[in-house]
Image (cartoon, rainbow, N blue to C red):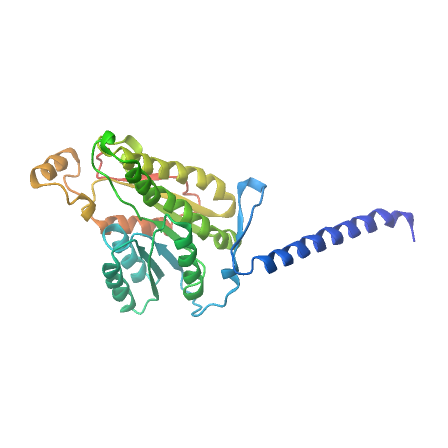
Length: 305
């Protein structure tokens, strides 16, 4: 054998050894964790790869329709967005934490359009609940093309009066839920090199609000997460944007009496509150926008802030 072939042979043997070793490691990991999700990290550009056993389960109802998950969809912006996507022919997964009856009403309306719809009740700030949700989504709808992180709660009151349990609960609902859902939605998006993530935030995350310190902090975190994650995922052709909502006419703002509402409207140049359907329209636009539009926090506030 020619001496010039020895380096090539050595490289070939090294590659065979390296690849076979990795395959053996993965095989034994699969045996040890066959009923548990497996997490692998990739050091390049900070992009992680998540491989779960649910990815290998056959789909019950494979479909060519795009699929979207909308959290907090039993009412308000989430409900309006779910109906908007359904009218556009998207498969829809909707969640809520406690309002199951209202969520099932949303599901029934979407199913009546002839559109597949999965309804799930659970805490999106709890990873175990999210794992169960994404297992069902994969089996019934397939991989997600878009994720709308809308779940959230507010707290109105003095910062000094807020208990640590209330703080933790709000952060879990408003910020940790975004982390959990993004983490589980991304593997299939990264693998297919496409996806849209829209985080529903608030203008209070930009400028802060007295007596809503925790809510402002959580939404400020959502805004920062949006910008940072967009940079991380841009090489994978995944866009991440946020909508910073102003005064939207939903149940979350129903606490105001008529005088308080009129005083608020005087501060808004548009002279009115926004409608959930207007937020839904913007969400839909972002899901069909250019791949160059990413990392933005877009205020939908009638010129208020």
